[in-house]
Image 1: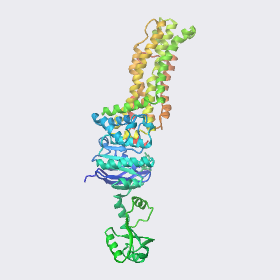
Image 2 (image 1 turned 135 degrees about the vertical axis):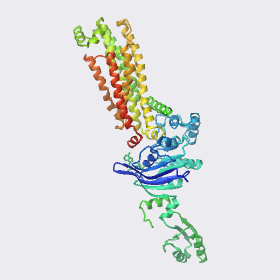
Image 3 (image 1 turned 90 degrees about the vertical axis):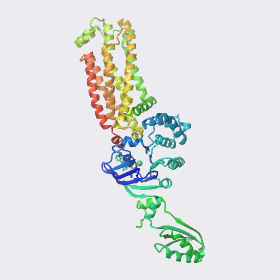
Image 4 (image 1 turned 45 degrees about the horizontal axis):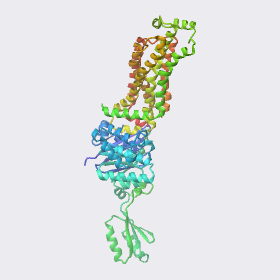
Amino acid sequence: MQPVIQTHNLTRRFGGTVAVDGLTLEVYAGEVFGFLGHNGAGKTTTVRLLNGVLLPSSGSARVLDLDPVKDGPALRRRVGVLPETPSLDERLTARENLRIYADLYGVPADQVPRRIEALLETFELTDRADDLVGGYSKGMKQRLALARALLHEPELLFLDEPTAGLDPMAARRVRGMIARLSRETGRTVFLCTHNLAEAQRLCDRVAVLEHGRLLAVGTPAELAHRLWRGLCLEVELVPATAPTALDLLRRVSQDGEVEWREPVAIVRLPNREAIPDLVTALVEAGVRLYRVTPQEPTLEDVYFALHGGEEVPT
Amino acid sequence: MNWRAVKAIVRKDLIVVARSRGVLLPLILVPAIILVVLPALVVLAPTATGLPTTSLDDMKRFMAAMPPGLQAKLAGLDDAQRWTVLALVYFLAPLYLIIPLMVSSVIAADSFAGEKERKTLEALLYTPTTDGELFLGKLLSAWLPAVGVALGGFVLYGLVANLTAWPVMGRLLFPNGMWLVLVIWVAPAVAGLGLGTMVLISGRVRGFQEAYQLGGAVVLPLVLLVVGQAAGVLYFSTGLVLLLGLLLWGVDAALLWWGKRTFRRGELIARL
Ligand SMILES: Nc1ncnc2c1ncn2[C@@H]1O[C@H](COP(=O)(O)OP(=O)(O)O)[C@@H](O)[C@H]1O
Ligand SMILES: [Mg+2]
């Protein structure tokens, strides 16, 4: 499959700081790609580089099979961006903002009114469409900026921290809209965020960025498996049968250890496939149990492991 | 050149200007003072108070110091007529040029520096417009209104001046060849001067106010012209005005060439 975004050693320096450092990655058509990193990790700079708005110090990129440095205008015609700050004209109304951007993006003139009305409807702004944007709440501004990014029906959408600075309700609403957007249209989304739950909820694959360098790329599950070989299994036991159970668990455990937090035993198995055999063995040995729950590490675990917050077993 | 995009930028900037009182106020006030209040005052004040503006001796000395070309123009007029022609045709001419300068600087300050301050530039940079289209759109959104106000202002000024001067002169003062050159040739160039200065300044300031205050210095050359003429060093003949225009267009070209070089996406976004 031809990647929608492909970078090779993409690097951008600002004086002494290296904002993006030798970034090599691929993003495929139709996926929601999470670009995860703390503030200052280099997410916004990457978005700018990929849109030909900022020039790289070295390295190269291809986006929609175009070179952002040489084909900026042609590329930007097919790409939508929700910038980090909504950068809407507050002295214009929502309709005026959209109207002007429809002209700037070259939306066919006969389609402009229909698209504007449809987007206002989708983003629940129709009632306030003729009010000056200066009076909007942060959530409304963010929704309007999203509508603006979609006016020209882009094939690829960049969202730079779409829920940062929103209150929880507004953030949830925006997140829901993004989820629907990617599911319904199958459009490729490049989502910058420092919000792990958001990445976990929305993204097919994530890249973790730190100081401009890529720490890891993969699906959240892949990353988890790469970091923690095997998986953790919680087994809740009837206390009377615990000694037998712990014996048995110790034998199948990958590292020979069992964590006992009465009445729950936690054991590390090589893979999911080991679970049925283990349950059968436990039952045959007369162990009685309430539940067996595999613990997939969350993206949060992955993230903190990558950032050196925990020991990473190799 | 994508004209639809250029027009959209102009439209956006003009709506924004029309909706901000801080920007609109000087755009209305300054032309009103220079083009209506000042000519009316200059002509009506002496007659209304019954006092001659200068004593006869002062006037004689002043006339003697005048460039010969101007003396010839004023020959055969009585004192009141001389004063009227001097004031309305000559002294107010360099003041008139303040109008296109002011209009273009105020709008350019809002459109270039103000946009940065309001953080609306980033989305604009992500559009498929080229750097050239963005630059042209921003230039036109300041230059077109400046030229428009200068033209409209001249028509208004001609009416006011003719009307107030009629009792003294008994003939029309405007239109006048030198003024036509001033309006058509010099005023658009002066508009470009304000604009070009603002483009260069706006890259280095944080916002509208700062740009506007710094850019105000560009009015100094015009003040020199006002003073120079009042002191009898030069006078606004058609030839001088033609030459002045040529000089200004040259300066404009240099400023805009330099401005265009600094107006690049990569530079603009890195300075946001
Ligand atoms: N225009 C700029 N000038 C100087 N340094 C910059 C500029 N833009 C970004 N940086 C630096 O580059 C690093 C990455 O910034 P950024 O891409 O904004 O990170 P993120 O979006 O992940 O928060 C930061 O250290 C930031 O200070
Ligand atoms: Mg950022």
